[in-house]
Length: 437
Image (cartoon, rainbow, N blue to C red):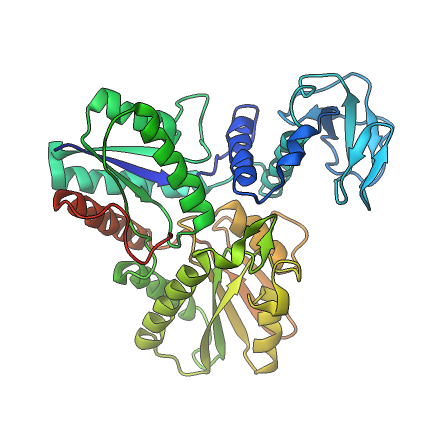
């Protein structure tokens, strides 16, 4: 028996550029396949989509725009300015859906003619998010050492019985080494002659959208394409484990040490969030994310309440950073940061500490989406430690970095992966019970 172990991540490249454009494009395709986005978007191709690099999504046309395409290459040809589309309509350039952001168009010209407009627009959306982070995401540099330590510990424990590789849904460095599930799993089967495959995701909360219908589907497809009859086993999510909760408790204690002993403190454990309705034709309300994220929060909260002693009033709340509008969050089933601040402010709390605990590092979802959910408009808005401070009424708020006590991620990741490997050795089922269907 020789077990191939894939340490799999959704992936977040440090930069958005001409190389990572295609990695993000592949993810956008997955959104279409999952029915998040209607397939009809791929039918529209008016030419090359452009933006003014000095002012992305400009409200009005510039007399001398510095035009770039969605691979960030300069464009010097003729272009038409397309204002924001307030309602779906037919124009002389073709049909535009409501909500289409302002841009420039090189009609039937440039490399983008032949590329669906949807992908080019999505590329600019990612470029804009990376610009709001100052042009670079710290996520890979923060989280890759965790995977490397897990690999080291697994190899020490199992020796030649396993072969460990990294893979990413969105490849961080595709121009240096392609590390998609397709390429990595093919190499394990063809070059390493593995007899069994374990896929362990770097997630505290697994979701059907990201796991079942995305990363796990890619893994299954990759294995199928090899033609090998090899059992595939998925590890369970990392959240809810004692080792995982230990790091959160340590972080809470660290933050409390910086506050007055008798302060009334609310700890927000912030999550990504996911629609509680349909998104496209996908019924997101049935996604296992909702139950999993609830279980992980309750486990972490219980650990905090049991281990943290505080003189003032103290509470722990769950908040979410995305999909908070009425369209995706009717009756406010998911607590938004601003609504949570209103609640604790009315209850006399003086300090809030937001600990983003769902991600193993400071991702775009934390640095951009979560900050925007707080109402912060001018980004970047954090210090060198990726911490942000603000004030809501009389409440002092601190959003911490997600990069804290990495050992709690490392050990949780190791334990879950070991559990999966041991299931293989014992010949047990490939799919963990109680996880994504």
